[in-house]
Length: 237
Ligand code: UDP
Image (cartoon, rainbow, N blue to C red; front, side, top):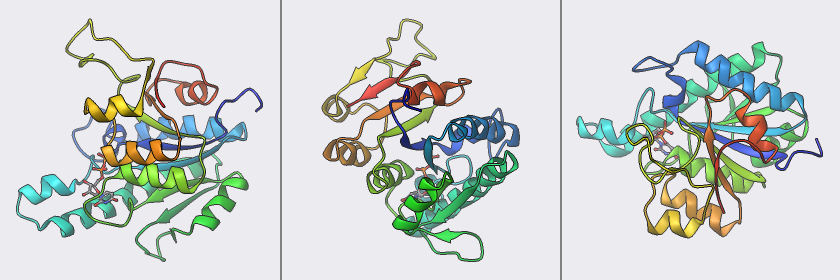
């Protein structure tokens, strides 16, 4: 444990990370693999909270373009995050990890409502907490929800698990010469408008001096390595 650099983290995963090779929805094998990463870290006594997006199911902005009123579309997006959270809870509990889902929109027959002190207590008891329904407000994203909860939970870092192993100066999928940044300042991310996280999420982390670490969620052992302060990633601080 003492070898770990970060002992309490908020891990943000986009909804798309749960799709696997599918175009839509939840790929159970992919959920299990990511749950395995979280379970391994939890087993070592590390405290992990999760925020999962919903891009694999429903996005407010895209739905607005089809004619659904924006706030309503956003509420639909928030509800979709609850589905992802429940899928992840199920996978984690099948691995023997006590997991609680707390929703920012109360739905007491499905999961707990968000109560900060209770969430902290869960984490202290070794349970994984999944924060669902984003911030509970339309016009926000799950990136901002992740930053908000990271600050509220007094996390050592906000980990952003993405499809690639950090932030690059151009798209590594199309440019073989793309270079990965080892570190970046919050300021550069904001002024260069690097599409790492929403500006509001980055600003919140800067104000609270919480580093953002971007790494690949698909790398086996990647979460453990990042929490140990090792592995391939980009640190924003
Ligand atoms: N959303 C929202 N408020 C929040 C968080 C999310 O309205 O605090 C809605 C919004 O419509 C968004 C959708 O939920 O498009 C899914 O979240 P997001 O796009 O952040 O998911 P990701 O891209 O991480 O999969």
